[in-house]
Length: 481
Image (cartoon, rainbow, N blue to C red; front, top):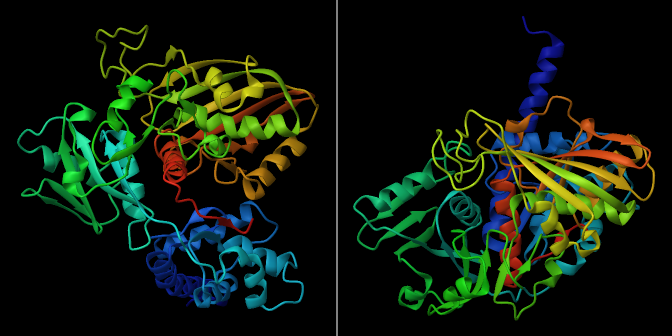
């Protein structure tokens, strides 16, 4: 016989499922029809499963004094659906929690409260034109960028993936490219349907028609013959890193701007989104999104420097192995990297600490860095050993970083965890540049050691997409402010 306690729990779980299932079509229609992305404390709910919606609500308790129930947030989602809103990212969780538990409503109805909080997109005209995107190279980052762009495809998609450019063209190449997009050993299966159009050399995925173009150099491609105009070219090859090399893309018909997914050389701007993306100007035709490690550490370093001041420090990255290393012992031009990646910890160099100053000039000459490649395929960690201008405590520092992750302009870059059990595989798929592990924080007066996790593939790809939006001038507000 089922006890009353067990029955109460079962009824509660059923209620959560019912609300989550009711939310899903509203969330889907808001995005597909109006370009409105719904999130719960930074966790996006586009294409989320019933369990994903429930779990997103559960994470609120990691940041606040009380959990947020689905029955509490649902009326806010219903009210948002009825409003005339332009494209934006709306954090449903923060809006609902502030109203219910922090008296942000101040006696107003839900509708009046939302009208005030969403005033900048309420009854406004959306004038942003979508932009064509081409992925030049289709390796680890290229395929994850494709997944992110396809995930948000639809009538109101601002970045439209139109083509990928690769070398080759041998028999079976198209099927293999599609298969690698469909199946990923680290990030799991593609969430949707993928088919191949052999006649037109294209991949069809969740409504996106992606032309596959074979070319050996950027300048030999004519994008206009595929109906692609004014395109943003995202170079994932890493072959060219200076203006002369990347400038070849601009010689192609139909191309107008280039974004490099690696650190650039020369005078090209190295952008860490959230830190110096305001440096991206309309006239910039070539920009770099820096490296995964630079993106992981710079937002946290900026927050710490703004609050406490950084005198100097050392950054040690514990980094998953990459395709540049050998699978088994073999010749490699770089020191140590010829040894088997899946069997060894390998000390190597990193330019990330020095590269921080390109996005954050005030730290010029203050940081040293090194790296240890370890036998894991994805998710890395940066250990920030810093001397601060101002002494602090573990409690003060963690509380500052928690608030930064929740409410600052860096909330899309910095995540925060208070878990005592988290390990690297738990961070696969994190959409943040870095995740502060608060339980590992060490403070001794003005000396601080911080541990920052990062999905060096997916989290970095999310940062790249944010840079793409700025370069394409298709950014939308993230509300509440």
